[in-house]
Image (cartoon, rainbow, N blue to C red; front, side, top):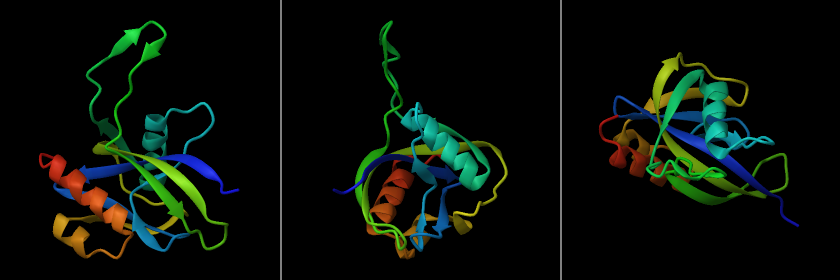
Length: 151
């Protein structure tokens, strides 16, 4: 049986460029993100993973125009995309990610990386089009930059 995981990630855009990390396990440039921890909402995981992997504090952007439905139900920021991915790790059996991908802007912190990546860089749209990464990552990043030209 194939393992299925819910993960969350952030397309961090600043000054017209998007932040990508060179991921160790996959050998590709990816946006920050990772597995959702127990008792964590997807948006919380996206913010936490971005901080852990980049050192940056971010604010998520998106549609949350219905604040409360009733006392027991609340709406959340809508992810920019929800992606179904077959993840081909080099050292683990392939498994499936359901990736809640958010768009975010920087509100603090300073750029750094952790042991999960070999480096980070900000890419313009033109650079993203030429970047050696997974096609879905490239497509989502470019669409996010087009959707948030003010960032």
